Image 1 (spheres, each protein chain N blue to C red):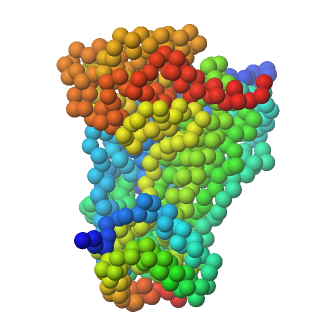
Image 2 (image 1 turned 180 degrees about the vertical axis):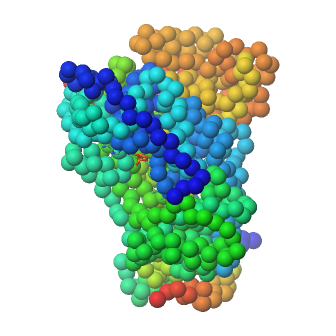
Image 3 (image 1 turned 30 degrees about the vertical axis):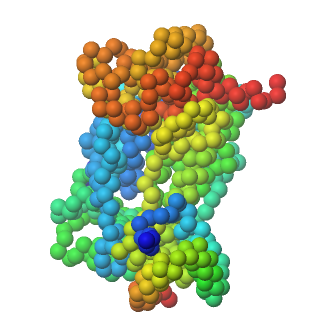
Length: 73
Length: 562
Ligand SMILES: Cc1cc2nc3c(=O)[nH]c(=O)nc-3n(C[C@H](O)[C@H](O)[C@H](O)COP(=O)(O)OP(=O)(O)OC[C@H]3O[C@@H](n4cnc5c(N)ncnc54)[C@H](O)[C@@H]3O)c2cc1C
């Protein structure tokens, strides 16, 4: 039975991060929220397997906003 | 001021060139006695090419500059004969710790792969690095090092270059076949020729403080994102020789560089970081804005640009001086081949193509690291902080954390000098790669593969081969020698007995065979800069000769209309 991969599975992690940051660069926050939603849906479909998606959803849901909003002004 | 280091003072000397009736001509003149210029002089000397090095100062680097010296740089310096004092003086570190807010989120161990002569990285102040290079230069009779000779003007034609030099005895003029310019990032020479280095300035400022600490901290690299003692910004702590520690505080674009340099501003920052009870003294502090840029072409007629003058990077990933030396080793064997008439001048254009590729790679990595540290907007900051948060628990997120990707040698993937593989090899190495080291045995005892390569073409052959192969190699080598090109056969045997012949190396543990995916009969053609040019499972004399000529730029001259 397959499980969510949490070890590195990127072929080029730096390139991915840079491309994503680049996508965000000249967009407003609202536009970026839409970009994020689109990206999640595309990738979720690629994953497909509901059990794996459920695992990812559960980790994602553990977020505490206080960490990330700490220094955002 | 620096208490742990006294800059050597090299005296001004008058050269006979200054009293010559007409401008003296040299094959090569090098402007700048920094890492790039000094390395070039040594590399050329190993090829038997004399050079004059002009430096406007009388000492090595002053203050906080490069500290991370990468493995490939040490290997290049080992070929020059100056790596040993660097390795002895430098600090070897393996453990890196990454912090986010209050906590360590993970640590990584750079524990180097064993069976390499030099360590994966050392930390050594740039002044030591340069001092050891200067000492080696002074031992080489082909190098004419002139301190306090400041180049005031240069002129270039398609035939030669001219330099006007200012000294305390007045100005003098010289000409040369090739002028190597390594006068640093601001390169007044580049500007005076109407040339430009283009790229981006990062809108950020960094306080770089070198302190001496008595406390016995472990030799680790520590990197903080958004530390409680320095909120919103990144901080780096790194150990150098003599118990000097480098601290980088990211300050943001709005910081006032003059204010931030004051000890009243620095003291509370460092106390907040190290605690009030830790004793330390400030050695040096400066505030930097970093940029990444390069020239569109590193070649202008008879003028060749090297080091920071040609390409500049932000220090995250330590690619400035390290990149400079990879460029120098790429250029010098080609220049020597051209000067000796073994290759057409068009070979030099591959210095530009191969090193443009290297410079772009270095700029890409430095830019990405800088972008990771300085998110451009709120969404990106949330992304960055989420990566850091997930990195506590999940290895995949750690692969995205970027506090600088440490310099590794560039592979000249699509170089015109490579002969593409026609056989199958299962190793990360390929034509264009820098050779990987391996322990070997020789008639004189244990040795290292890289010490047997370089400065000329080497045909690295595995096993005794059949007589047909031996003859083919002998024919190829003989024929190349008649054109003046030196190519040596280096035979790898599994023989462990000390009675190896000269020109033979043993591979008792099979490490070389494994790293190069060697099978009996496999041959690697290795360039004078220790990069792979071609390789075969089965070869003949003609293939080898063709590949050597290709590595010397033969295919390029043929492509040009007559
Ligand atoms: C804070 C900081 C940290 C860094 N950290 C690292 C690191 O960890 N690793 C790394 O690899 N790199 C690092 N770098 C980059 C590194 O310092 C440079 O890449 C390196 O010094 C470039 O060498 P160079 O020989 O091209 O130029 P330079 O070192 O600038 O040397 C130029 C030389 O030319 C001379 N000169 C200038 N004009 C003339 C003239 N008209 N006539 C005669 N001589 C002249 C100068 O006196 C000088 O000696 C760092 C840089 C900074 C600022």
